[in-house]
Image (tube, rainbow, N blue to C red; front, side):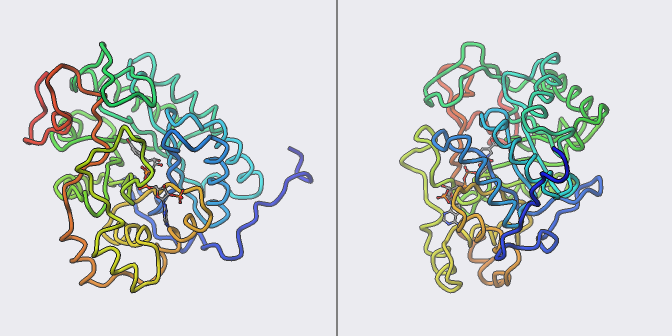
Length: 348
Ligand SMILES: NC(=O)c1ccc[n+]([C@@H]2O[C@H](COP(=O)([O-])OP(=O)(O)OC[C@H]3O[C@@H](n4cnc5c(N)ncnc54)[C@H](OP(=O)(O)O)[C@@H]3O)[C@@H](O)[C@H]2O)c1
């Protein structure tokens, strides 16, 4: 676009200065904004609405966006990213993550899948590219929890390393700056750390007050892996397939509600404040300007008190919401088998 036609990208007058938003320093020295906008529309928010949320968020001061090929909206988001950069926000100020979907783990599929995300997002490089799940699988997006793919496979470390070698090649090619994992467990990460030439810079994992995963959180940080917190508010609009009667609701917890009342904010904002203050990087999803802004403001306003942090530490319910049933690979298994709850990788 000729320069004279470019519309400067306008910051909202009530937005937050992106330079005042806290950052994490990754093992490479790169600076990751300590909050990002999630872009998974939970199967019911259309691509153009999510792209609109990215525009609102950038105007509010967000610079970190969490994308994935399987969310089906990277092309729409790419148009908005172009608009933002053409309007004067430098590429280096943005942090864009994308993820390799489960049917692209094959050695010949990884680089083309990344190139497709880059083309859709209209970018020359990604800041972070994650293996979305450690299980190769071909199930269609939005299938019911009882759906099983006849080709589903357990975690096989040698196969994962074949995928990881291609991830490393993406760094060598300059197509991605960092690589990382998602939905991993300690035993799986131990093997990866042992065998990786390029270490994972981040692990995206479910983290919210009712699901704090203290061991995995500590393990990640001790090994220089940034814990990126998905579903940080407890994913109140998650699809039906990800709901069970035993699930608890973070934003209705009396401790969260009490702190929200003290601060005069929505309980969701307390979840975000707790996340950033604890040391994880939350990526809340929202399409509402008010909520997008409130979540960002939560990162720069006065911190929770030590007592409040301790109270929230005490409400962990070990309540995993995104259980991953569709990845089970044989009859008679329960979703716990995916998460190595006994400290060992569940045998095939
Ligand atoms: N790696 C993985 O496997 C994985 C899995 C799940 C999610 N993710 C990523 O994590 C992101 C976030 O997770 P999520 O979408 O499951 O759940 P979430 O961020 O915990 O919850 C999003 C919901 O909270 C509401 N909300 C957000 N801010 C609010 C506020 N200030 N006040 C009141 N309500 C608020 C939103 O509604 P409104 O739109 O009405 O504001 C939306 O319905 C996803 O978008 C995706 O990028 C990754």
